[in-house]
Amino acid sequence: MSASDPKWPSAASLLVGGEGPGTGSYAVASLVGVHTFATSVTPRSSQSTPAAVRAALAHYSTWSFEDEVDLAHVIRVHDRGDIDEPDSDAGAAALEARVVDANSNFLILLGGDNALTWQALGALARGRLGEWGLITLDAHLDMREGRSNGSPVRQLLDEGLAGAHVVQIGLADFSNSAPYAQDARDAGVTLVARGELRVRGVAEVCARALEVAGAGGRPIYVDIDMDVCDRSVVPGCPAAAPGGLSADELREFVRLVCAHPQVRAIDVTEVDVARDAPDERTVRLAALVVLEALTGYVRRRP
Image (cartoon, rainbow, N blue to C red; front, side, top):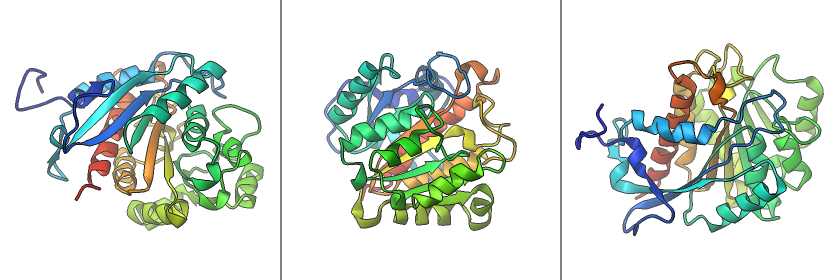
């Protein structure tokens, strides 16, 4: 790969500043960096994951071999920068203004920890959480009490998100508790364990999740917590455990879910750059998740 090779365009070239040039026939997506970390249950560094993911895009091209589509020819991604001090009240207000102002039907948010999910979906819903659906790909329920990266699903439910339209996929053994699982069930949340995903397959589980979360035509928010993966492929995720999803399963799910027209936004969370392996495998996988999301999104085009 060479950045100067005109026949091998870098995926980093997909990002354009601000509102970007005239879009013409291009699909339009927006990207915002939101490096939440201050309320993490597991202490983590303040080193910017969004910056690292943007840099990692340079390792990849714009061509999807499977879909035979060059993203550079069909989509523009407006990089709307990062939110300063996103864990503060001022940061939350800035995020709300940024996502409301985003000029696209598809938004990618780069965390940060999972506190981002509560902030971003709340900002998008603008007080109407009951009209949204949520799909999480996560080893954890995120149903803890209080306000942290372990509590965003509970916070959203408490603020009006309907449990009947929440689907949590990839839940891992020995990474959750019985009381929190019961809280989720009592709220009507659909829970899909890691083993069930393995038996039913990614495509079937994804299709059913979209039906449940999107019932009635409601918009869907998707949370991709990278610690759903096996720890060997995401050493930069503090809470990842052995036996999680493969990188391929993660990528397949993201491409499939983002092809659905009701999916309005997706976040990529729980990567701590300071803990990553020297080969940057976690950050590079996160960059591929961004590209899978974009490829899924352009599948919607006629």
